[in-house]
Image (cartoon, rainbow, N blue to C red):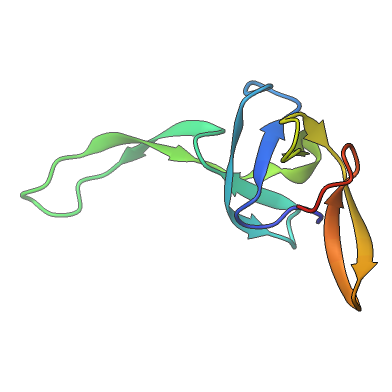
Length: 101
């Protein structure tokens, strides 16, 4: 996966197309990421104690990486990620502008 926790991404496909958010968590084995404020579902939560009440809560669910693109730090448009060796270290670059990500 070329995106990681803390990256700002833009949704390219699905119900939330065009919206952007920050990656909160990554699940590399499943090729999914959890994006803040994207892919929200309503979950019915049962009352845990006699004093508490059952409720409907909204949660962000993981999304597949293929429907996301990294947001270019310069233009704010979707871009692909590339790699470059600088001073013996591998760094990520935005393919659109060539800037460091």
